[in-house]
Image (cartoon, rainbow, N blue to C red):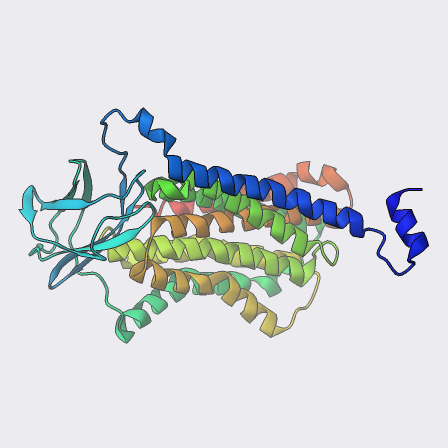
Length: 403
């Protein structure tokens, strides 16, 4: 008779697994205690001092944000070195300038600080900033076009909201207005529209992933940009797949909601990038570009409507879907122009890419089910034509907005 059975026989009220639970807890505590002792020994004895050869510590500095105002230039920097680093001097256009640092003192790994320079920058000109550390290492940053950074006032927020509405919300709403005209399509027409949705989502997936990796390369090394993008996209995909399949395979309004969510997350990342470009003076948005954005995004509304063609959803559903897909562009513009950092934009785009991949899987599965022929529906002429049309339209219209 084993110990658990003996305890149960002597005292029926005693928990059978209590002995095993204590043993499991002990084996959980022992390795953690060993790890703590190893860390304590490493810090007290400092065995790495024997490897010192007089070389300076590895230093890294990333510029995350630049603000230009009437009292000069402010830059937000993030340290990423192996040891705390000290900023000794700052150059602007090859001339040394007095500066103030907030907070003052050495920057630990991962810490940030604002550097204020009372430099009389010139509107529309380019300026180069060079930071010199105590060890002599230098880190450069270029201001391509000097323009005042937008301030947090009601007028600027309203202007950005209006722009976000025109590049995000309006085109999605216009695309959804085609819903009544599309309801009478037959099986081939339905396949074409669903494949069109997959095509435009495939383009957005590639676009979001490429932009996420590009922004990740600009972020501090401590964030491990490329790994962050891949892991965030994978987590977004898996979580949304689990949520979508919790109550069965999504169809109709549920599937349209997932499509709108994926597009909305992509528009959030796009808004962050646009807002940051305007704040840095790297782009000017004219009427032609606004029209280009509207034309580029109008297909998104058709794609959202496609899974609902066999239903008759209420009007509030269309309003909610339009806000879910286009509204994040407004939020992205606000955040991007006022509190931009490349790693957070990369993270937003990566989450959007994972959401879009989930929607591609679900729409493709829905296409095969609704057609009734299974995988054979994917090679039907209408499906192939819709896929090509979706990708081609998004690619051609993207040429109008890429600058």
